[in-house]
Image (cartoon, rainbow, N blue to C red):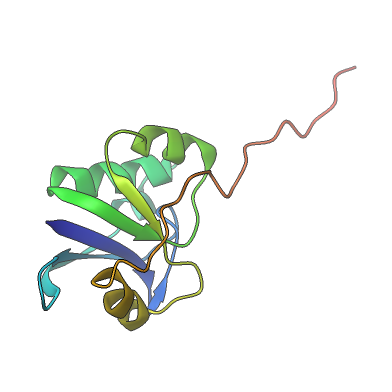
Length: 119
């Protein structure tokens, strides 16, 4: 099975903000298969969705992120399993994922709000 980690530097990041995506083969050693620049960095809207689509297109079944917005969370539902790596480094994620110690993301962490008033 393949899993991916959204990272900025060595820290886990969100799908719309991460600088890099790391794709691994989930076996006894978590072998790095590929590393690529986050496509979300080149789009103006639906950044999280752009990134999630890119990992799904690569056959990834689990994605480790630090947080996610409403629209990207809804897009991911039924397509890919999201795992919470908030505050972790890439190495911490690699140690925990093989042991099944990462929790599934069950709700969006960034809410779309209605912030203006009507006259």
